[in-house]
Amino acid sequence: MEKFFCTGYKKYLKAPEDFQVEEVIDPKFTRKFITKGSSIEKMQGKYSLCNLKKKGLTTEYVIRMIVQELGIPKEDVGFAGLKDKNAVTSQYLTIKNVGKEKIEKVKLENAKLVFIQQTDKKIVRGDLLCNRFRIRLHEVPDKGRVREQLAGVREGFPNYFGPQRFGSRQDNHLVGRLLLQGRFRDAERMAGRMEKERARFFVHAYQSWLFNQALEPETKDFTEVRIPGYEFWKPTHPMEKRMDSLLEKDGLKRTDFRIDKLRLSSRGAQRQVFVKPSNFKAKITEPIQLEFALPPGSFATALLAELLRNQGK
Image (cartoon, rainbow, N blue to C red):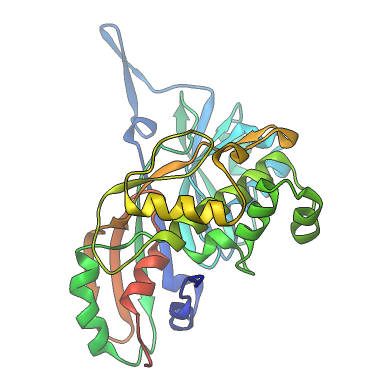
């Protein structure tokens, strides 16, 4: 039976301000000085390090607006990860060959771009250390049950990919499956024109779906498992074997993760089965207030789903 991600937590979030996310990036980007030989010099470089604060918007949408205002290619903007739409978020960008004066003239609706300093490196995925979350949950009926769930969540929760990965209709993985099956017209009928990077997003959604379906949350397991891609390796963990079985059921094999028509390949990834939040704080008041940090790629929505499990039952 197919498992679907619980999104019941949404009714307890009344406004974007109830879900706040702040990126923590590698300090190599924020250092003010650099050592060159025997001298210490002020950090310089062709990239402008900026902070982007936004509300009710996707990262991709805001980047399109920035690129349009500055008249630069999308590839000149570097970022470490995508941030939630229905939230207030803070993240870092690097912008190539654009100085402070031009950046300060950028005007955005429901978002603000702030120049920090010049740097010599472009931010890419992998430069993110963690995400910090501040969340308020309103009118949760059974706060006693939340208290009971807290101890378990502090010690780790199932590292599901959150519903954001699967889109507003929760069907991004179905588009990815069609692409891997070579059914490009069917995929475009569902999701529109399919360019390489957009197609990669849907394939990743399918890989995320494999992980979620194969995860059995009954036992805490902090093992790192491999999610299938084009690279061949022999499954050893039971969850890896379950993901392979799901692939086979969909009529797919590892080599299908190379899509020659789109010049696209996806090698798969490694991911912990369970994840433990750090710096976890909770106040069971009205509203409930939560603060915690998660490693890159882990979803606060998965923590909320576990914390609020069985509410109203």
